[in-house]
Length: 102
Image 1 (cartoon, helix red, strand yellow):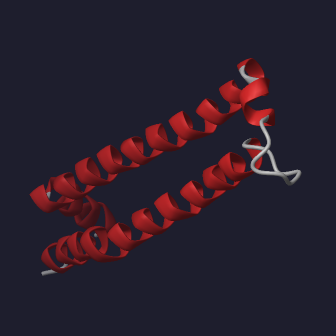
Image 2 (cartoon, helix red, strand yellow):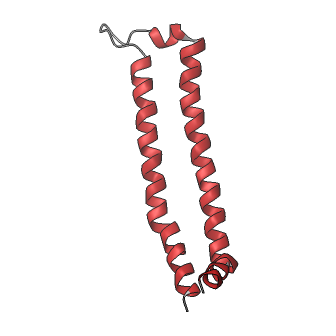
Image 3 (cartoon, rainbow, N blue to C red):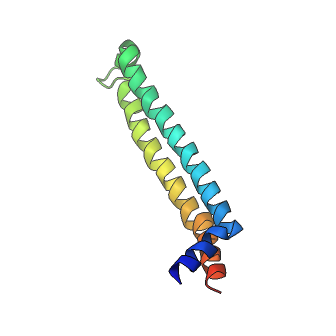
């Protein structure tokens, strides 16, 4: 019985749509994160002078807000992914389950 249910789920076009959308979106978010993270690491490795520039008369350099920006970007894209997963992806999942258990 379980194999039959699994086969019905895998054969459902909405399941294929869910897998395809989720994988594509996951790769896009991964690439964005890698570009931001490795961009910052590349700046650290090859342009220390830029990151060491002082902001104003204080002791804060350009690197501090950029590093904070990387962290905030991570939180932001995680939130965006979670919101889409909890709405669009979960709705598709529920449709697939409903159709498979009929």
